[in-house]
Structures are given as C-alpha cells and as structure tokens.
Length: 339
Length: 261
Image 1: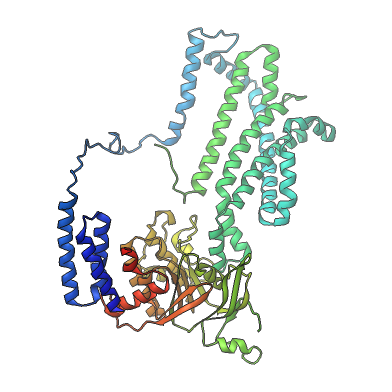
Image 2: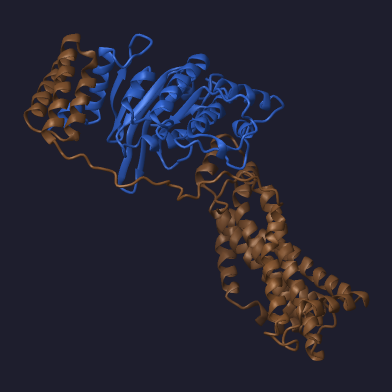
C-alpha cells in the first residue's frame, strides 16, 4: 500500500521537472507532497525539496510576460455613499407618485392645456367634493360602494380560499375543482350580468354576487399555485419531525402559501373595484358608479373627476392594507427591496 | 422471507409475538434484502445492513450509487420498496440543506413537532449545545450556512434519538466550517451516544468520524471497514492515509495514478 503510493510519487516528480510545466502540473506535484505526508520523514523531505525546485524551474521556464492591470475602479460604480438614516416615514414617500399626478393635473388645467369642460381643475373638484359632502350624497354613495365591495371581497376570498385548499390538498379535489375553475375562468365576468339579473334580479345581491365571482378567481388561482409550490423538502422535513397532517397544513403549507395568497388578494381588490363601478352603472340609484353615471348626464366633469380621484385613493388604501399585511405576515422574508 | 416495511425497532417490544423485533432489539437499524427499483433499474438490490446501538456508521458511495435513496427509505420518505426495513422508533434526520421553516424562528424550528411543556426548555438547551444559545428568536434567513446546519443538528438532538441519519450534512459548507462541524458532531455523538448513519462522499470525513465505514456500489454494500485509529484521529497518521487510499480505491478513484496518467 505505502509502496504503491511512493512509486507513484517517484513518477510524478521527475516528469514535472523534465518539461516546462503549467500551473496544473505544479498543483499535482503539490498534492503528491501532501499525500505522502504520513509515509516517512525522508521521503517527505525529498519530495518537498523537489517540488520547491520545480516551482522555481517552472517560473523561469514559462517566463510569460506579467499581465498588467489597465485600470482600477470602484465596483459600486461611484455610488458609494453612507446609508442615510431615513427620517421620512415610508408611507409619505408612497404619496410622492399621486402628488406628482396632482401637480401635472394642476398645470394642465391651470395653463389651459385642457379646457374646463374636458377636465375640471383641482379647485373645482374640491368644490364638488364640498358640495356633495354637505348634501350627504358623497358619504351615502361611498358607503354603499364600500359595503358592496367589502361583502363581495369577503365572500369571494373565502370561496376562492376554500376551493384552493380543496384543490391543493386533495388529488381528487384538483381533478374536479381545478378543471372546472379553469373552464369558468375563461368566461369574462361581466358577461355573466344578464344571467345574474335573471337569477337574482338587480338588487344588492346581484352586485355582491358579481364582485364575489370576480374575486374568487384571482384568489383561487394564486393560492392554488402557491399551495402546490410549497417546497416539498420542507413538507418532508415536517413529516420527518413528527408533524401530523393538520400540523403540516398549519405549520408548513399555509405559511408557505401565504405570499401567493397575498398576491391574489391584491389583484382581487382591483377586480372588486372594477366590478362595483360596472355593476353600479346598470339599473342602480346608489353608489359611486351611479354618481359617476349621473354626473355624465349633468355634464359635470368636476364630479366625474372627483369619483375617479376617490377610486384612486381607495386603490391606494387597498394597496396599503395588503402592504401592512405583507409586512406583518411575511416579516421572515428578506427579498430584494429595490435600490 | 417475510416482507416488513417500516417497522419500528423498540427495546421494549413484545418479544413473544414478533420474533423479528426481538432480533432487532439489539440494533438501531436492521435491513434485509432491501430492493428499490426505479423502472427496471434496481438502485438498491437486496441490500443488508445492521447498525448497532451507539455505533457511528459512515456510508460512502459514488454519486448515483443509491446512498440518498437508502437514506430516504430509512427515513420513511420512500415506501416503494421490497425487503425488511426496521429502524429505531426514536430517530431523527439531518438533511444536506438545513430545511428550516423560513417563517418560523430558530427555537420553534428546533422543537418542531414536539409537544409538552418542557419542549421549549429542551430546545434552548439543544441550541446551547450547538453553540447557538441566544439565537432562539432569530429568523432562519439571518443565519449563515454553518449556523443553519447547527440548528438542524439541534433539531435532531432535541428528540433524544436512538438513531440519527445524516445525508451529506456538511457537503454545502466551506472547508473551515466543515472542520468545526466535524468536531461538534463528534462531541455530540460522544455525549449522547445515538447510533449514527452518516452518508457522505467525503472519504476524509468518514475516516475521521466513523466506527465503521461501508461502501455502497451497484445497490449493495461492497466494502466494509472497521476504523481502529488512535484518538484523536489525525490526517497525518499513516494508518489514516492508508485507509483513505483503500476507500478511494473502493470508490474507483486512484488518486495519484489518476493525476499523472
């Protein structure tokens, strides 16, 4: 055993000395020296001396010109700066975008780039808001719309979640639910309205039903994909450490699917507002969509723009709610947060 | 022969009713004629393996030799097998990646699946033992690779297992961290005396830690060596080098010969 190793080393060393060797050869000779570490002092001393000689010889023999470095640079691209403490709270920075839009709007109307009849200036819109607020119309219609959206979201999220859980956890559930959902998903939700009116009329239920249907799909699609995307290795680890089926769902699958669910929630909030506007323009006498529709009849662009601004603010608020949820529920994540 | 899959070895088993368990009472693992085929290819082909209580067994094998498949069978992750497989009921696994739940803090990861009021206290003690006392409230993403793997060790230890199975646990760690982890694992195993099945492709690691080394090839154990080196084991010990070369040869690697020809 030892003999064979020694023989092999005898072979290595002369070969390396014989010809000009590249760095790879030198490494191998180095390995040889290390590997015979245990064989004996004589052999060890001899080889190290040889390798040292080889190193010098190689350096001289290759004799390649030293490659010069053309320039040095700061790899951060001169953006190197001390991190400033962020004194402004982040939510105010989130308002910078809308503020910019407001400035553009003021400029466009103030400089008469757009006529008052096409787009009311911010001052008129504030006036319209005052007028409708004092008459109570704004509060009533806003409350009605919020009520519809809240119920639609609540039922739709619950339904989408339930379906995603059935399809995600059980194979038969996937076979039955997922194919059905994908079939129904292809139907534009607003195409259901005539049928909904036949079924449940034109009351509150119809509007809430429409929103529910629209909300269910984004919740379902995202949550189902997220459940199926939970790392199987973590599921295995959970099982290996004695988690029961419910423990596995509670400790591994639900937290693992949460990021996907929140994506679906954000999306479904957008869908809910879209659908409430649509539903409130058909056979209604209340809601923001009704107000918007009526403003068209009166040719009041200030009220129209007011409604649009309210939709925008509501969108921002919904986004804020999901952000707060993400921050508290997903605090374990450390993702890319932008530069 | 009787085919019994995923039984449990327990010292207090009823010996009158099941003689096979009586045989197994003196072992942490007993496998007879284990076969696992993927399609027509038998990755494990009539494999026999016994591990005594408290014994540290290293399993070496080339990539694709079925090491991980064997570990998956013993861990209970794969039941499409034939043959008899018995493993200690109190067992724990350390995977190649730490597999900590990222949404669960370190302590809760360690005591995952444990019940009872003393669990948190035991978890804290286990973290202390792996040198991570005080990190109970950390999130897994904030740990280095070595720290995460130490949490995984604590998670295995806290169950006071009779058998610990490790699947190339230090393969993804840097060389310096690996040396520290070897010392830690050695110390922990000396103190707690579980039977260990340590799957690795690193021959040095096997020689350094194991009481017995097995080589898996062609779906069977093709070589077995008891390691009788004086403690502490040093890589400079000629017997260490000799065993290392022998094992490498078993794995089809002829170090210097390969390097020169």
